[in-house]
Length: 100
Image (cartoon, rainbow, N blue to C red; front, top):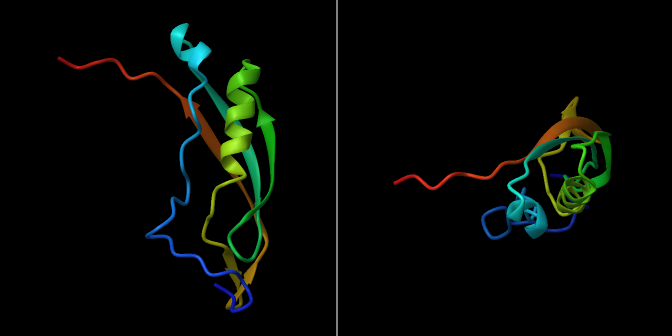
């Protein structure tokens, strides 16, 4: 991580906390996948999150975008220097069935 980036301790802070499952969607038993394109700055922060493909449900789409903006990731490196990069990340909303 570059020296001029804010201190970050991955052991004490979640780097990719999953989004909150919208309660109304859980009650209806709905699931979906949102495909995001994330711009990661040289410090590992999400500089921009945009939706490449929505789930078909605005509630999932918004929850995925909001969660992504709180994430921290390892920055890309080129020639030993941290650089801004873009990645695609799916965000899945799936309800797990209770297993007896």
